[in-house]
Picture 1 (cartoon, rainbow, N blue to C red):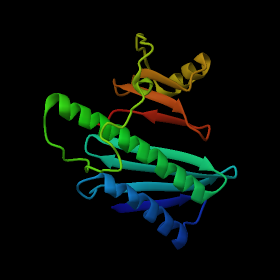
Picture 2: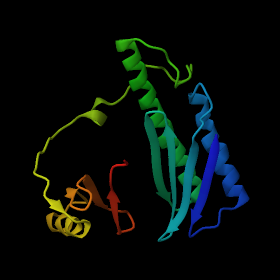
Picture 3: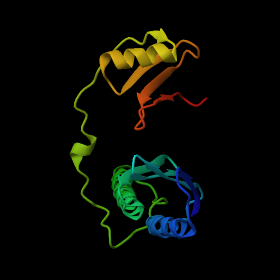
Length: 183
């Protein structure tokens, strides 16, 4: 497992780096082959809260977890727990699909500690509402204004500059983000 560890408003000490690598290396036991992608870890301090963000790109999925705590080491432990739950859900979903369609298991290792029939909460995937609306072409600034007017934390719009569907959203730090499709 390769790690990309960086700090924002924080110096990443060797002890902190070792702790992150040790804890995240535990996740390798869930996979048949070693992960070829780099695990991205961002450690930061915002308003006194120690924040850890971890992103692990996999074939066909991305695992991402974030946690904020008063203690950086506790945040790391909590993020690893969240990632383990995500892996179990992904493994259960993959195994269910394999049983239904047939195929080989090549992403996850068979682990006697974790049953393939790990109970996934069906509520986690329950769709409770569907909305349709017309996408009006607008620029990013107008989309941010529209989002603020309706009081939502994201807004889907047709970008008049690129003619593609984009999403603007409010980040945890109070600034704005833009999601656009990769070409």
